[in-house]
Length: 294
Length: 200
Image (cartoon, rainbow over all chains, first blue to last red; front, side, top):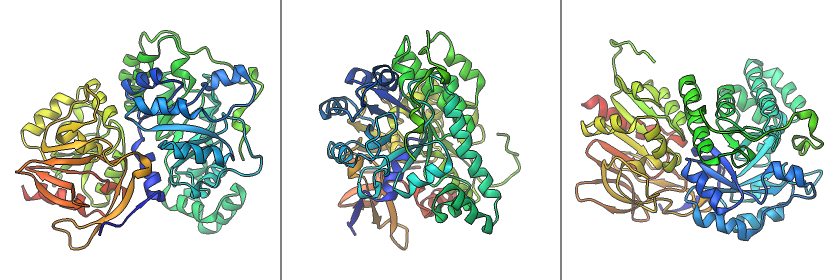
């Protein structure tokens, strides 16, 4: 009776379930990782540059140096995530061999393949992928993603795209629950998504995996907005360590994500946090990361 | 959150600061058990039992302090409120935690020593069948970065083991699991917990 299976879909999805109601924070070194864990993060995303800096620097953005990821794993007791380029399955093999807990196949890095995303079923480590709409989300799930994050627009400190993508995904989920059996075929065709996943949504009223929100969240109010719109948890990238005073802001965002429905608590934790990251408008950016991936 | 006082049957609170609380609420709903999420002290009024779900124990420990729930919960537990803790919930109930954070504090309800992430990282997470005392057929269990029980006190009942290591134990009115009964649709462990309440 001791036969056990690792790397199965329930085991992958299970870790995503455990992160619900939490905040996953981008960190670029062990010191930031400690700040994140001390502030109550449920996981850290280890990367070499936060998206705001990738935007400024330009060039090709790749997976992080394994040594840098080792350094963060050494100081963290919470799960560690790391990003790989879209379609770059060898970066994913390397990251998995480091014992990272979750891989983000991320549009924030420069895509490596213009036709195919990674076959995520082939890995034991769970994957999270970005999506701007329900069709994209379901295609990633059919490739094996155990978590979806609405893409938003990373590195902007502007929540408008995150709201657009979250509303788009959850709006279509709601509409599918109103559809009859025959209409589900049309939904699958229009979404370019597998019919069984569309049928599952019609039955459960939910995405088949947890839906997190990412891309532009910078304040406790932003995190609570994502949660009230129906996200299961939030990613905060540049928003914490590009602000004036990261530690109290990180803690405030954690509290806001838990108590997202209580305006009194949101007001309390929003006080005196110093300046958030400056942020940029959508008409000021040259590259929309959200348009990467298909 | 107002529950009519005359409605019969126990009310189960599920600590909802972070983690897999909604799946616990789904399981209880499927059993027609009255349940509610608990994020603030006032949510405890009228609650007869509590589930501490899986999630990140360090995050929950911090939020127990900031939410003001730690003291009132501790008082209820001392008074004997039945508790079911799963994974991170097991860590919060354990008398002794290894590899935790220095500032991480629990409720000391079960006389066990557990090692946080004692089975390893996510790549070592697994699912398996368990023989559980009181259940006629095996229970399929999902272990996610699970705590590993390293020592069990003499008064603690061991209800299930995996490879000789206790994974489901009971100490008085508190039951703790290293795995996640809420992640499968098998509600038998939730039923046993609720039956314990009705028996009182």
